[in-house]
Image (cartoon, rainbow, N blue to C red; front, side, top):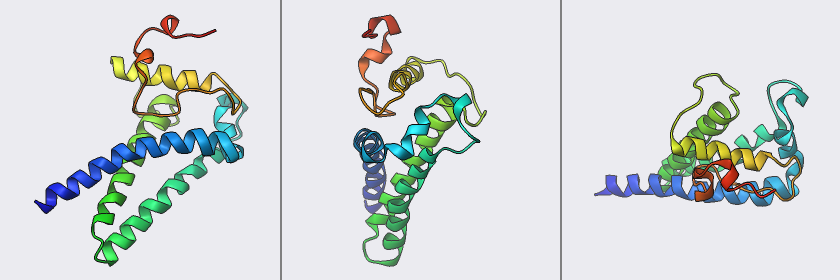
Length: 158
């Protein structure tokens, strides 16, 4: 029974991280931490080198995960270990979808062909259509608005 509880904690944490990432993206990255995120909205040919300041957000999310591992393993609050595992799994999913699949920073796999993968690309493309911190849309990654499952002409607003 305890194993099911821990699996549930991991799954709920992964789901919760999508909302945490959405809020961090909308209110921090496009807010007072725009100076870290701005270079991510620039075309690839305008960037210096492989890394972006935006990559610092990896640390922002890695710190609570690491602390959850440490506290969960060293105290009676074992459930925190599984929160840390959930944050880590979400981070891996985010890395594979955002950095590898969408932005092709690593050439591990190319275009996936499913309605869901196309919707993710459309939503992220709509987000990157703006190079400024204002007036952006689609701040999440895994949960995609239904309008992005339709062809672009069906949701384009200009």
